[in-house]
Length: 588
Image (spheres, rainbow, N blue to C red):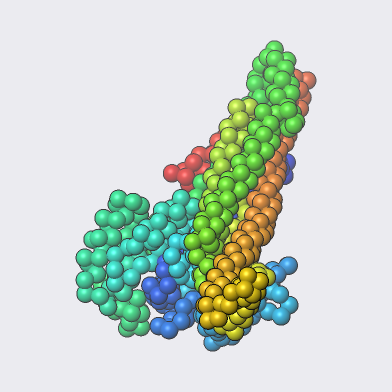
């Protein structure tokens, strides 16, 4: 159907619409569908991916956990490569046997000497389930809702086509898991929950019932139970009954029908919309020419109408157009709102950190404070990104509605920048001294104050003619203890001040980078929408110009020429309408 549309573009001299149809054809020929497999640590995510593809591609071990994402996709031959975050992005081919070294914790270093950071491992294998463009992404465990891993997983979720959340049959869903599912559902249109390890826990049916209740109350998503070991054995033995017992038949059907099917429907709908838009423009063109040919007296009126349409279409391309004003004002307002939201979130984090520092001694709690701060900032950055993504989609709809008030065309959803680098959050580097006084230093401080106090009272006593004797030693000890206590208090206050300053420097650095990234993202969204609707306006202008030229020429034809051309135009209208009917049949 798209190929017919491209042939029509060539036949009717419409290279402008051919560009969008070519993009739709590329998407149909090579679809890519990312399914993110997320969940807590040690819940069986890697085993689930291995069982789905029927091969051991993701390392599975009881002692270590996945540390970087693994992308499993289709390939003619088994091969693997590591992905590095560099400028430009870099990948290096590795043997399949070395995948484990890069994926698991305590494996290869995640940063090279040249500064390139390891961001993932890609494995390609020839499997039927992957042949349609499916990419399975095995992510690190979320480690609690507020952890950096959770933020990174949510960042991956926001760019995914579907999410499979994995939880074990050892216990019912925790509060953090349900909250993660709720946030994932807001970021991704298709989410499912899978209970694993049903072969290991006899009470898994009771766990499934409890999880169904939790999901029905808080996050309605499909729930399935599977056993990866049973699936692996079934694949090896080609045992259909064992495969059904493993529960993977339902999961594979869900992936094929709900996830893969929805992607196919989406691509088909987009292709249909492109072809129908082409047919509408061609139909308007030939209808105007036919009206001028069929009624020479009405030709002048048709030309006048097309000239008026030309003025309106040309106005769509100006900065004064309503859609353009909505876009510019919307991006300005959204930039301010996102920046204000980020600042408010950072202030809350700083207030929480100040409260924790005031209640404790940083020398005792700093080891826990650093990961907590990174986790909180990562979580707040993702929440800020959710706001940006939702508001950008709303802005796209408003701009599209205003454009459609003047012309019928397609609505393009903006591509929001990948937040994964932000979710990782910059490393927490500080230069503060949080060491407590050693015993020797405490002794020296106590002696100094004891000696000074005793000496002062001895001198005072000698001035008034009173000998203090042993009482002076006691006074010295009291003064020494008090001086030591005051020194400890002063040093705790100093450490708290240094800790607060370090936290503020870190939060300022993160918010500075995040603010720049959000502004760049919104500028990209603005350019995408501007270029898209400017292109549509140009297409409408070209279509109207052709119709105007044909109508003007029809008014100058002789009667015999008009009759001959009228037959040709009727034939073209039949072809265009047949193409539209075929496109509508594809969409169902």
